[in-house]
Every structure is written in C-alpha cells, then in structure tokens.
Amino acid sequence: MKPRTELYPPIEPYERGQLIVSEIHTLYWEQSGNPRGVPVVFLHGGPGGGCSPRHRQFFDPAFYRIVLFDQRGAGRSTPLGEVRDNTTPVLVRDIEKLREHLGIQRWLVFGGSWGSTLGLAYGQAHPERALGFVLRGIFLGRKREVEWFVNGMGYIFPEAWRQFAGMVPERERGDLLHAYAQRLFDPDPAVHLPFARAWGHYEGSCSNLMPALAAGTAAQMETDAVALGLARLECHYMQHGIFMPEGALLAGVPRVAHLPCTIIQGRYDMVCPIVSADDLQRRWPGSEYIVVPDAGHSAWEPGSCAELVAACERMKRKLVTG
Image (cartoon, rainbow, N blue to C red):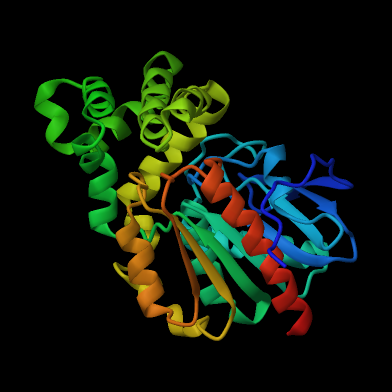
C-alpha cells in the first residue's frame, strides 16, 4: 500500500511553553499530536525562519508526538533577530536542553534547508538521541553554497538579484554579504528594516519552481515578522561559516550513518542546489534519496510536500520495527 502523501488536517498544540536557555534568549516551544507517540522534533529553516502551524501537518498526529520550537532569534522566541550568543554549537545545546526539559529519550529529527544543516549537526553531536532523519533542501554551509546564495542565484533569477544588489551602492557590491551586514545590524529600524525586507524578498523570489507560488513566498518572507530574524541570522551565520569547519557535516556522516535517513531534494532548488544533497547521499549510501522532478526549494511545492508526508509515513514502519 502506498503511503499517505496529503498533509494531515490542522491541529492545535496540547502544550506550549517558554524555555530560558541563556541570560539573553528564551525559546518558544510546543507539543501536538499524541503525548505517548514517537517523538519528532521539527527544525525550521533560515536560520531565523521560525515555525508555523502548518508544519504540524507533515506528521500523523495519532502516531507522532510533534515538537516544534523557534530557534534563538526566530519566530516567537525572544529577542527577535538577536545574534549575540547565537552559534551552531549553541543551537545544538538548545535542542538537548529542550529534549531534557520534555523528558524525551530519543526522537526523529526532521529539518529542511537550514533545518537540515542543524539536524545533521545535532545528530552528529548526539547520535544516541536520534531515531532517524527526514531532511529536505540540503544546505551544508560550505563557502561555495554561501557564495551561490549571495551571487549565484542571480544567474537564474537576474531580476531578483538586481533588486537585492541594488539596495547598496555599486562600489560595495563586490561583497554583498558585508554590505548587508553593515545595514542589517544598524540599530535604526529605518536602516535595518528595508534591508531585512529586501533579503527576505530575494530569497523568497528564488524559492519556487512554480511561478504561481513565488509571489506568495516572497511576500511572506519580506513581512516584518519574518524578515528581521531571517535576514539578520542568515547573514550572521553565513559570515561566520555556520560556526563549523569547512566540510565538517560531510566528514561527520559516519557518526549517524547507522540510522535511517530520507533525503528529499527539489531538482530545481536554486536556494540550496542539488549538488549538496548529492554529496550527502554519496557520503551516506544507506540513506533513501528522493529527487522531486518538479520542485524548487520550498517545502510547500506539491511534489516536495507530498514526499515529506510520505517519508514520515514510511518512517513510522521503520521506527516501529526498529
């Protein structure tokens, strides 16, 4: 029998909370689904993207204990857009603090885009806590991937890139990441907000293969509620090489290669090109690798969305049978 591919109906959390993780940061978290079910932790993209209620719908609420949380500086976590005390190792520790706070022994790790990056970093640091992985839109944080995001997407989306680059004087366009950082971290909202919106619009404009979805994605990502956290944190992490040695996530795959993993990648993903998913799969030959032939980067394109639901359905059997 083929696994389900449709999103589950909307549900509400049965528990919400705030977890203090430092003198600066407090994380929003929630649980939904089956309190006695198999735990799954959802790692959102960005960094800085935050979770949405729709993310609960990838998972069978009768089977899974669904844990969503907003990472430092993102969504409903506070303070929004804060980059102090915000690095990949710190985010990994936050996941462990949340797991311990909720009394969970092991959980399935689900992450897309930056969530795939963080999922790999977490799993490699704590393989004994992972039941398996569902990863989408692979981003490994390498220099060439960052360079592609900042400049390379302009080869495919020149209109969006011109608008993005056009926010800064021509003399500064040789280092757009630095130019944006100078404005994004200016304390004046009149300076940083237009650049945050421009960053969100650029990424959103390049995230869909399907043109009908592109305008909606760009509009959502340039809203003030999303753009500031997204732009500041993405810029911060890209400037610092995701706070990990170059190539570390590929080198660390043997630490988790014994666990089940499904990799889902849009063939025409322009934000996180397929070469990174291909590199990961070749390093992890036991993983299930699904290339969606009619999808870009967004998880909400029909083909990718269907494959994500189906992967969680197949994972149910693997988790039950051990």
